[in-house]
Image (tube, rainbow, N blue to C red; front, side):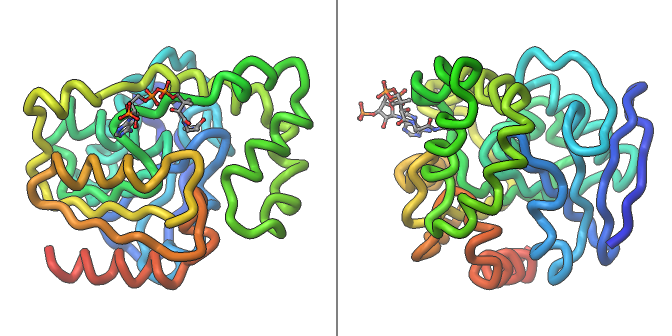
Length: 246
Ligand code: COA
């Protein structure tokens, strides 16, 4: 695992590189590249820290499309074209990259995400007032296994403002009507979701499956929203099988 930087549209994008394969992983709200360590080690590819996350530089982000702008520029500069793997907010970013910059997208892997990502008002309203309590509840929703909730608590409390900002962007992200009125993703797409995902329930991925012609859905048992951390083997097997089919 190697950490490197790339200057993208004036912003330093920090990324982790494993085996050199054209796959770019995009993390979710208040996370960073390291959430993909299990996939990177086995499958290879590049995981970036979105602007304002991890070790990347800072820039004003007003909507999911702004992240998509930097991700597409990163892919173009580094690889030309890639399979994009996006989790949660990262999955929203991947969909927007496809919508606006489809020439950089070889295929999509959308993990624990959806066409709309409305957020429970309690998370947004209370995150600033009572960060610790709210993040505890949020992490309970995010993981199936309790040991992970404890492991990530402190780090998320430190990132509560970033989490708030990202969840606001999720809450405003909405492509539901677009899909319903005929928006089509026409690259091969793999959908992965944890059976116990409470933040982006299985029906969100089922909706994408029903609206993306060349798509496949893998539902992973005994996993929550952070399925790639909780069930790396199942997720990696699904990714490898998908890549083999391209
Ligand atoms: N894919 C398919 N259908 C979706 C969808 C998606 N991504 N998002 C919403 N819908 C559907 C819902 O199933 C619902 O359909 P129904 O009326 O047939 O039940 C309808 O659209 C309206 O849902 P929604 O926009 O979510 O509004 P809501 O007022 O019903 O619920 C929340 C709002 C926040 C309570 C709900 O979205 C939720 O529980 N979200 C998950 C928790 C969360 O905070 N997640 C964080 C995401 S990062």
